[in-house]
Image (tube, rainbow, N blue to C red; front, top):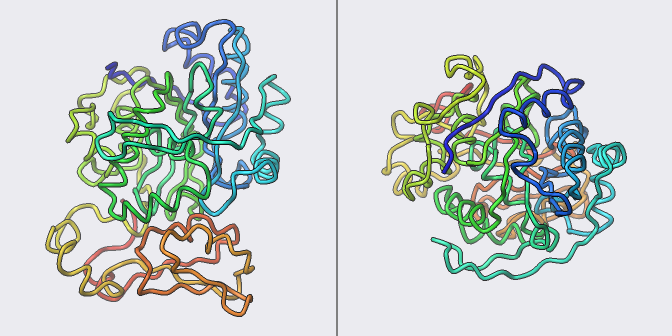
Length: 390
């Protein structure tokens, strides 16, 4: 597999069209990835209906630029994704999401189509190391080719969301919590994501790192300007570079750890063939990781912590989701998103989380549109694990 990752400076989204075209030229041109007459699914990150400036979703200017290049090649671009696990995969959900995220405008200005087909299919995948069958949204399966247009963000569960994690959006909305319920640890979840990545078989990966997210991603963090666009045909190599930008150690990145076990790679920056930038220029100073992340020292990285201390001191040694009753709108999205049935609406006034049932997947925090789910560090957690940057 090609180990090259192409990087170009893009200080702001006003330059997206020009810079995206330059990036594709560096990679050999759109003719390398799409042929005239083909249908190309642009798999974007549309976690939920959020404004582009919130850095939750792939920016519409990047999507517009890619769609225009596909259209210019004579192929038919289709913007597609299934929003997060608290939302039904329905035309109503898609309409709201497309409007708020700027995808409606991106489609109008580029000539791309927006996907309205909310059907999905059960696909057998015997080659999967862990998962042998997936529910996959139909437009991705029907496309001649898939382009993965991901957003670089922190993530409370997998620590980072990039090229590999973006594939989770091909699973229809309310089917996503089932995977969290079955795959409760990050290693097994990462294994599922890599199986799904292989199944989708995207031709091209473009990472929007112009405006990233730090802190409590993938939804409740803070935007952080990095000013880069990245491209590759290798999602693992692209995520290795994305992790370097954040300062996320490969040993603590579940996707890269699992990829290394499978002989996929490169999982480390030294083995990536960088084009367009020097490695020393990548890392962003003081990039804030999620509060669930620990950089690999002391009990936090020890198997004793995972197997003995964490079950014994679950609340004291973990980051616990807690509802801010004043912010909660009682919309019920967190109830639908929870894979374990640990969240309920109390007297229809606000959500309530049962700590005993909670498995710390943070789906409720991820999907709350009101940012009403706070993350509370337990006492022992605060004593053992330092807060702050990755």
